[in-house]
View 1 (cartoon, rainbow, N blue to C red):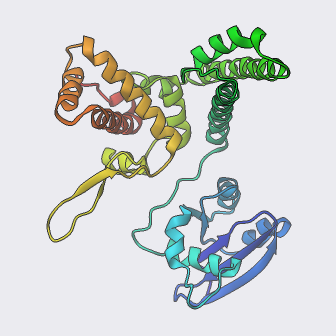
View 2 (view 1 turned 180 degrees about the horizontal axis):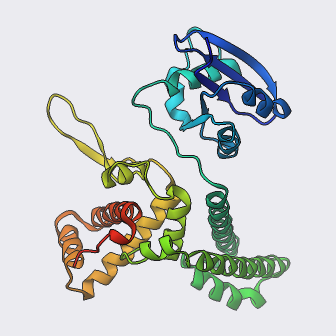
View 3 (view 1 turned 180 degrees about the vertical axis):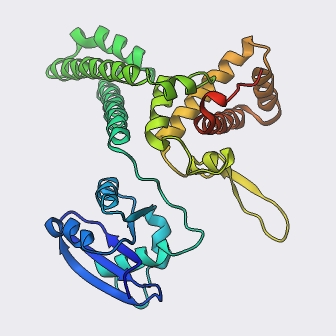
Length: 337
């Protein structure tokens, strides 16, 4: 019988393959396929379903295998873990490939859509920019920490750290002047880098799908471009609530015995995209104090009833649902009055 499901445990140099037929019997078990032979091995197989974990390089391999007519399915690694039979097999590449193959056959398994090259390159811009932002924050905190050793305590605000550290620079003793001066120069260099990547994002935001997302309150250039690069047209989600749940913006349930208990938000999915939505929601809530439209009235009522942060999360979830509807319907999507 021919192979109908092939599980591949991805790695840097050596890959493990596990293929089964329609009856579930193992037809292929190769734990040591070198990287140079992987494409050739998969190309020789009849058209089947290829399952992999959504990790580094998975989207590249998905595009390569799809060229041969295979159906490629990517899964989050934590969905595969329960299928690893720890009592029967040790933790190794062959056992991982078998677990991937078993998980992909589950009827209600949720899969990750394979990204195009354009989507991945756009995401690289966001990842690089966020890396520069994190490095700048770490450098500013390093300046605050070093100056506190000399009795100079600076506030948390980045602009204050820059200004006050520069004011104290000439009065610093010994090597402290050199160190703080170099760190301030590094912060200035990172500011220039971040501004450059902001211009890259502005250039990406000129495409039609991104401009449509920017019609929503709280969705700017950074959020819109990251949304398009991350989920594309969002056809993998059946509803706006499922999309919000994928982003981790819905409460976690602790329900039992017919009684519903809702806790904090799950914080599942991509943390970067969720952070952008939260930041946009905070801006909407701040601007709502001077507005009287329906969304502003709603968000102010939620804040009065449930508090600031729950109102922010509610606004972020609402924006996520609107983004899903807009990406699904395109020009047919009508904003509420």
